[in-house]
Image (cartoon, rainbow, N blue to C red; front, side, top):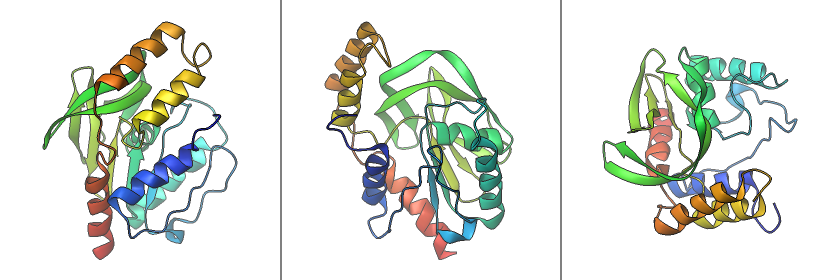
Length: 214
């Protein structure tokens, strides 16, 4: 979008907040980039996507195979939004379309309390995979975060989205990605809430460090 950083840049900036010592490579698999070998990098973040786990795309099945291989190799995985959904769906749970789009700010309960977070999704995890534990929830989204019995965590919300980024994206997409009324409602929510730019970054970073330390 005009004048806005790319999604990869936004994600890399968030990762650096929780894991500042890491070197970060962004691979646009949906855009045609090849999946790496599982051993090529120390850890992986699976980002959001405009697609759902039920879509027929040429990269979805290979991604599922990659996730299974990463689990077998105990390579740390972090999932965000679609990443949360595809991980759960691949590892024995289920994700599907649930209700109208949720866009703006929602509050999620975790062990640390209740925090506002930016959201943009219509799909949700509706069945928890075997060996996974719910670590975040909301009334409208009972499975908003998962921790696995191998090095992996995931969340439904977008901790990487800063207010200026999601608001700018909404304004530029008014009438195209969402109707004007939905955009205005989401912008009002974003303006009312102070969402931490490092939301969930420390928790994800610490999971990766523990896994790499053995």
